[in-house]
Image (cartoon, rainbow, N blue to C red):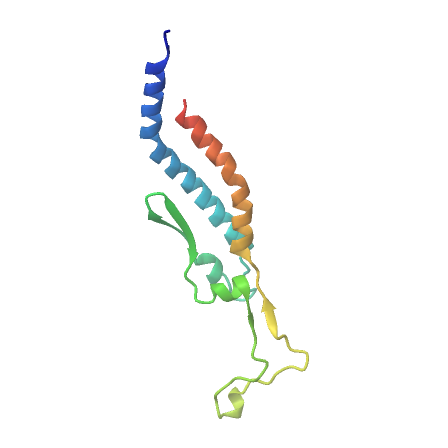
Length: 140
């Protein structure tokens, strides 16, 4: 019995182990940039003087093969997930000039925009294609 092609298989496995990390980093970079682009497009911007929330999105390399898309704006979670409003029940100022006067038809809760959540869901569908590209490149 003679087995042929073991040397070729060994060479292919060696090459794929050497090329895995660079290929994975390229794919992570592509995925991270895609997510960043999508989340920025979905981020709301105030008409008058807005854009801070959108400009605050960043992609950051955490560890060897970990990429994070973050927003360091302090109000980003409130826009993402929503928040309640005071409707005039808060306000510690004794000066009537600074007391909030609620509207009779005021909003009790501002719905979240879920710009990151929706973008992640979209990108997750595309990740499978990137993994196939990595695998194809490794076995060449």
